[in-house]
Length: 222
Image 1 (spheres, rainbow, N blue to C red):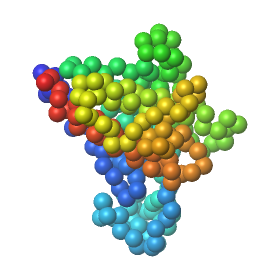
Image 2: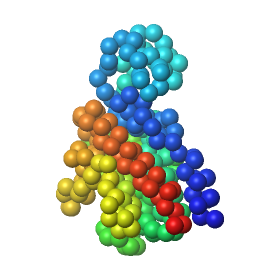
Image 3: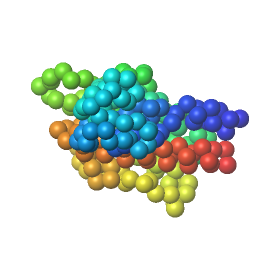
C-alpha cells in the first residue's frame, strides 16, 4: 500500500551531519566553516582532518575538508528537491501541495516559481551554481533556493493543519513578500558572502526536512 511505497522512498534518503555540515546521503550541504586546529577529529564521522591525508576524498589537506565544492552542494540540493517532491506525491492522508514546481534532476535540478498557489505559469530557475563570476551574483540560484524553502514551508503548514501541536524545529518565515526572501531560524537562506552563516541555514533546512519526513512516514495512511 501507500505506507510500503513511502518506506521504500524514505529509505533512499539519509539526513545526518558531519561536524558543522548537514549531510544528505553523505553529501555536505553548506559552504565553508573556519578550519579547526590540525588533527581535530570530526566527532560524527570518526575522521581526522589535519595536515595529513584524510576525509572521504582520500586526499584532503588543510582547509580543503572545510570548504564544500559546488559539485557537492548541487548534488545535495538535488537530493533534497527529490525528497520534497516525493512528499507531495506519496502522502495521501495529509495532502501536501507546493506553490512552486519542483524539478528534481540530480545536480542540475530546477525550481519553477509561481506567483500564487495553483497558478499555471511558472518561471524556472536553476537550483545549482558554480564558482564562475556573474554580474548579478547568485540571483537566479538564490531565487530557486528561496523557492525550495517555500516548498518546505508549504509541506510544514499542511502537516500543521493535521496536528496543531506540531512545530518545525527551525521556524521558516517570509521576510520580503516582493522578493520572496525566506529566513530559517531567523537566518537568511540566500547565499551570500558569509559562508558560515549559510552553512548554518542549510543545516537548519535539512533538520526541518528530516523532522518532516519522520512525521509523514509515521502518519502515512493513518
